[in-house]
Image 1 (cartoon, rainbow, N blue to C red):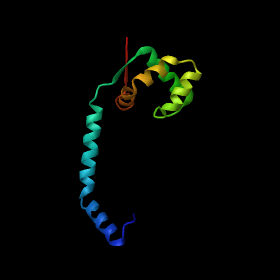
Image 2 (image 1 turned 90 degrees about the vertical axis):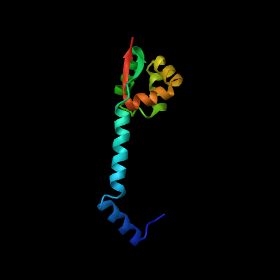
Image 3 (image 1 turned 60 degrees about the vertical axis):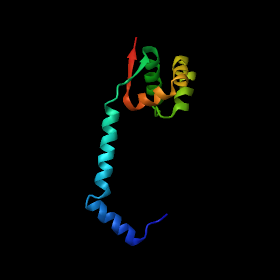
Image 4 (image 1 turned 180 degrees about the horizontal axis):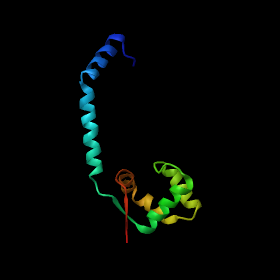
Length: 103
């Protein structure tokens, strides 16, 4: 859906006056603050070491879970694969909030 010239002018005017732009910035700031206040996800030390090893080896984005899993299997790091499979939600939270090794 394309905006007409008048709609575009109104949107630009609202943004320039601080209309929805300020609200958007405030919402983004609020979400970032909430995420940054979260505790890091606790992860077994061996699994964290394997994750860091895979990240360094592949230089792949850790968001690319299939690639992380594949490389972990190829480099004989099954603990990482099992942990990701059993803790998918925690893995996602760890990507946002960081990981902390537990003993």
